[in-house]
Image: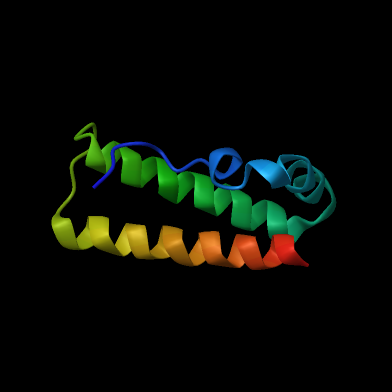
Length: 78
């Protein structure tokens, strides 16, 4: 388990400009981006024991983060 936050700019560095533009022009993408950020932050806080949660909840958050990342990737592929 990595305690490194999985920021979208680091996950998809070649798409930073595209993500920025989509956040401004596409409400659905903006919501996906915001939700990913919120869940990613919660996972990172759980992993670093800033806000510990039970293993099941942490696993579920990771699954949601992965699904959102996949959806964002699909969106970026157009």
